[in-house]
Amino acid sequence: MNIDSLDGRLLFAIPKKGRLHEKCMNLLAGADIQFRRPDRLDVCLAVNHKIALVFLPAGDIPSFVGKGNIDLGITGHDMILESQMQHLVTEELRLGFGKCALQIQVPEHGPIKTVDDLAGKRVVTSFEVIAGQYFDQVDTRLQLPEGQRTKIEYVGGSVEAACSLGLADGIESGDTMRAAGLHAIATVMKTEAILIKSTTPKHAHLQSLIDLITKRIAGVVAASKYVVCQYNVSRDKLAAASAVTPGRRAPTVSPLDEENWVAVSAMVEKAKVAEIMDKLMEVGATDILIFNLDNCRV
Picture 1 (cartoon, rainbow, N blue to C red):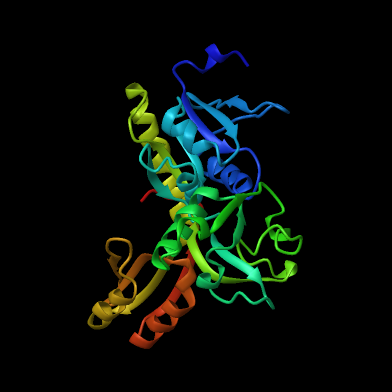
Picture 2: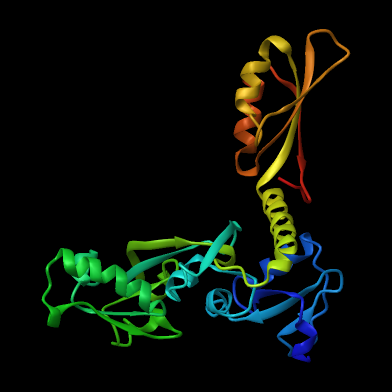
């Protein structure tokens, strides 16, 4: 693709593979960003917006957004910190997927039981910066002299095998690798996918499009987290029912033909639906219905 064809377009970086890629494809579809990606090409044009999608490794996206010409990007919160781009990019929206914990893991039946036991030994990780900062704090707290501080070594893959193969005494990696005989002794941080933009705007004429896409993505994310709860309740019990379903701002209340009764509609968290329905029945609500959301604007 001729690079000149990207002029005047919003550049949007998407993880090209891995745990975030498929979720990002669903997110783009929900935001009505239509495109066709030719085989083996990492840049493609949207057909209904002045957007060029750029497919990059998730770990590279913070740098391209922070220091390059990319306007928007989706990556992991851990990738932002590992690339030390937190001062050059702005986290616009947490996307609710790609969640995991970066943990300190050691052999389950080994002598190391705590992070303090691991201090001063060898730690292998693919998150060298994050691990280094974490163990710097541990070493300083334990007042380890310079020559005895924890040694951080980078390995790009197969981190979970480092202990069994004699490369490390412990590792920092994703969720616990029980298949490798490891267990977690500490959590360094929790991460998830983030929509980011450059802290210093690069293309002022694209700001309205950036705002539009951000709002659309926020609507898709909200639709995945919320459902609509609708029920009938007598007016004398409305206050108690509204306390159960306050909505994102306020519930919608409509009068019914039957005197002293109203219909209530409110967005509620999908994960709490069963509990909310139980509480509504307890306060006297009837005809409680739940509707899934395909999309919304919040």
